[in-house]
Length: 409
Picture 1 (cartoon, rainbow, N blue to C red):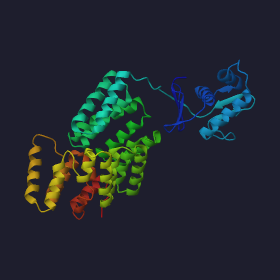
Picture 2 (picture 1 turned 60 degrees about the vertical axis):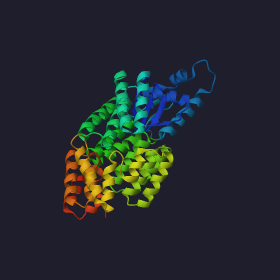
Picture 3 (picture 1 turned 120 degrees about the horizontal axis):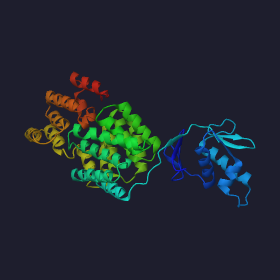
């Protein structure tokens, strides 16, 4: 048996000889696993004790077969949470054998990925994790190279979606240029392997940042975590959704889970600052950002969290200048952003930040409406503590209602 067989929350992989529950590998001894393989390969049919004896132990081995089979079946029932008196999986037929009675779905077996495709994929992930504009572009090149060498490589398709999304998050390209291809790549990955946690996670990110479909995003993240509870990125990105929805205690719990999965990640450490900031815990946000800098003092994302800046540093700087009374400097930054818009993509959210600092509510709302119309990626922070200063403005309240986001007090 070389395929993958799914029943209830379990998958039995005939090629790798693994039993997984909700994506987590279970420890199974060889004999119980061989018996389960025989039963699952013939659902509804009786597998006799003689057949099990011959296949698992062989005819030349002198052991207590009956005791060995009974012990193996008992172990399988423990792993599956089955009850001999009221079985859901393994039915005992006295003096005859056993029958697997659960519904079984056979999936395509996981293929062997070509070595050159794997190498390209690993290089792509290396560049993706660096999170600089040039490295993100290089990661896309390597993801495409992996796909060219193995078009049915689901992780490469999922990674390509990841790269497009981060480019959108950093405001390096217009949302309409990066999110549709990201979704196409994520859906291709899921078509190749529905059990891939990475693909469900990246689909959730698209649903969150571009489609603003909070319910669908939550379902995608939760599905990813069912398949792989140790996938740190799913915990991390799900935590951001919870912060956006002002479910701050749950967000903190997910961030803690992400850190347990990947305690040395500068990105995850930086997002503790984000979650604290969204909850209005500003001192904790500062502390968390400084803690993250201990992991990587030059991490761009951590610097962004510290100053609400990264690729668009001048937007937040303009806000700070304006609030500090340095209006000419703020106005010059605003003019600079306007000039850049003539030749490059500039997120309306960045322009709105400077206008907010200058106290121009009409301009802020105009930019927020433009962000809404063009589905700007960071539109999801429209309810953060900066913009919630506008909560008394009816236009702002209407916008938040359209986004189905809570208004901060």
